[in-house]
Length: 364
Image (cartoon, rainbow, N blue to C red; front, side, top):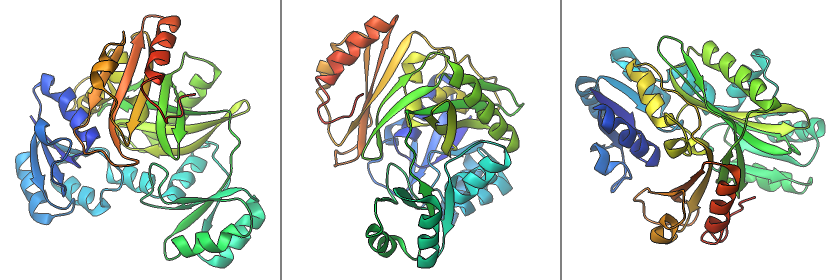
């Protein structure tokens, strides 16, 4: 069976590496050269909406998916007319637009950060008057890893932010004084079976995930699973979905969702009976989902803008090295490390050793 993937970055690469033992083959459409996924399948170089490549993909592949939400919606709509493609165009539309996303959350009774749409400079002034400062001004589309957003701390920041983003649909969000950033990842099959992974606690550095750690079940787990289940069923979703959350006091606020495998779930490669990547593939091709039970205690470290010595990493008991085969650039995710141990003290020992190799990260 052949799976077509729109995008050829590290998520596409990890999907293919998970799928090869299952007998799956892969085609990647990506405009880049030397892409991360190139060694794991066929790379068809071209734009994501190249009509010739999309027609070829329809003829060659059995099912299609995508590795990031900034793929042109018209691409998924075209593919959906001619072949099975998951997640759906509707899920993509909701996740691409922060206002649509929050409207969906509200309709499903999922509490979210207070926000206002901003379409003019006057709208921005009015939104600040309602939400107060500090607040975060974000583009409604094409933002990820801290891109497309500005923190407004006083009224003097408004003009600069407006000049930076005007001409783009915007949303202002109230600043949240959260206790923890969490994420819940789940997979839903074509038949409607749902499997949840444990919550992850996430620490970001300048908008990019630096560190993530699997959490034992607690009072927040049931709440997060309930929100996730309502999203999966409302969207008739197939594949892996991630929901990012803020823990504020004794409740959770939804931040945003990602209709794909997610960075905070990379620990599942070594830390779960079935990884998020394998379960995404099982879901989209119509196979039964695998068990998501954790295998011990796990943590994830992103390598952003630099590569530590992989041999030094691999000397640490329980540490696993994942190189994305990408040129190193400031702010770019080029590898990740997972740590797994049978118990909490063992994981703490691995984390302590890894911290010494990862200068500049916010590791909690």
